[in-house]
Amino acid sequence: MTSARPELIFVQGPQENHRVVLMNNICIAGRSPQVDVVIREEFVSRNQLQFIFTHDGWIVENLVKARKMEINDKVYKAGKKILLDSGDVIKIGMETKLLFVSPEDDPAEVLMAYRGAHPTAVPVEAPADAPAPTPVTKPAKPYIDLDAQPTEFIEIPTEQTSETKPEKELTEHDQAAAAASRKKKLYMILGGAWVGIILVIALALSTVTKNGPAKTGGLSEWPAEKIRAAFSSKLETSHKPGQDQIEIERADSLFAIRGSQRQNYYKTLCHYRAAMAHRVGQAVPLPSRQEQRYRTVLQELTDIITEEYKTMIQRERNKSWLDAKYSANLILMDYIPRKTVLEFRDEEVDKFISNIFKHLNRISTKIGPK
Image (tube, rainbow, N blue to C red):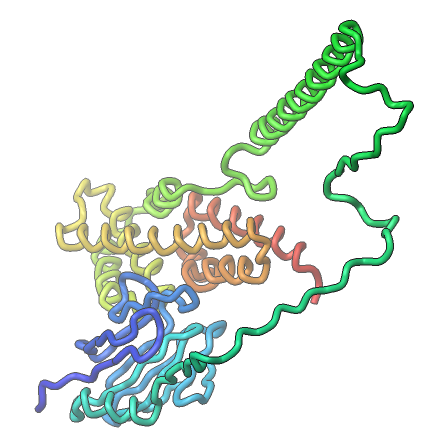
């Protein structure tokens, strides 16, 4: 049995010319730092592609309904499993393209064949003696637009008539009066500007006082520390002999495949927390191995949820309502599945979910009926 592994070659996008070897028979590709193939493009989902080795060969599946996947310029829906062959080009996001190389083929030869079929366009330089384009200027307006709003006032000098008193003939009294008048106008202008600045500052302070520093549309925002505290809070359950070991076995089995589906992170965490809850009466902590796994999945889930939550808030602030709705639904439907929430009742997680629903309701009102 050969030890060769397939490769993915980035032929376009932010990681162009990078190579990744698929070391496992199930590999996840996406923007998350925890996946097997990390793709550094903001339009790629955290867990978008899944590569699986089968008896027929390597297949790829798009895991995200909202994000499309193209193979050799053909678009495939989420859930469609496509058998790959050397030379197939997978496109995701806005610009990332991955060239698939089968284990039995030479990556250099496959890449050379791809470059030959997709030569890079070379820009054509203009001749050195080409005349410079003549700028086109518009003729001056032959009339005065009375409805136009001037951007600034221009003082137009007027001719001095015999009735205008020359400056040298002004008396000292007149000069003093003119200086006083100019000083008075300057004080009035400065005073008005200062009052305006004070009003702006007062308005800003009143807004901060009313809404608080962490508000979006009057809704509170959860910091990362509060999100982590919610997912690590103590589960309330009645003690059942032997149930702790059952929960540990379920958690361990899910821990091994937690990256294959988004909901597995929360499921794994809940089973470890349930095991700890059933051990409260015995005053026995989790075994060291399971304790480490619990802390690992807690950190992974907290990082994922926090990033998606911050993305939702930022999209709200930018008034990107459809994108904000996508982020909210991603958290509520994919990462925190309702069935698991109902199975493991958790007051703190319920509060977090309630906060997201409030944001989602506000977002929906902004989008309006379809």
